[in-house]
Image (cartoon, rainbow, N blue to C red; front, side, top):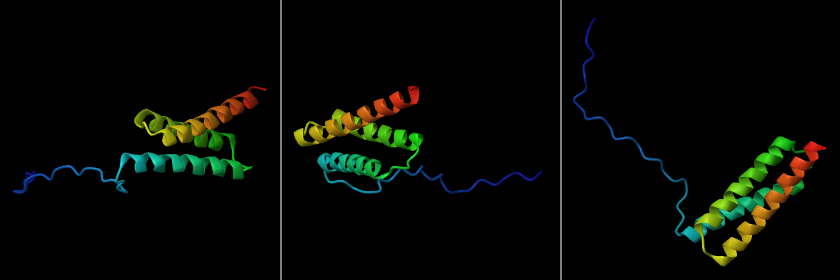
Amino acid sequence: MTPIQLSDQEPKAPRKARRTKHFETQYEFHNRLLVRCEERIEELGMLDTISRDEKMTHLQNIELLAKTVLAQTEEDDLISRAQSALAYSQTHMAEQSFSTSE
């Protein structure tokens, strides 16, 4: 059996994950998260034929994004928008749970 020759080169350092988009400020980042919440809410209003599982996934994503913003920001306008999105998702998740228990 022939031994494997080791390279004289040093091992490469592991690559770090790169951001896909650079946000100049935390405000812009949190605003973008809320825009995604609002887009998902609009999509849910337009999709009548969406399955229950898909709807729950959308609602859980909205909830997660809104809670992330609420935990990380002190900006009143962002807090207000995040609270609205969170209330929407929680109300509709409760409706979904209620409709399946009937």
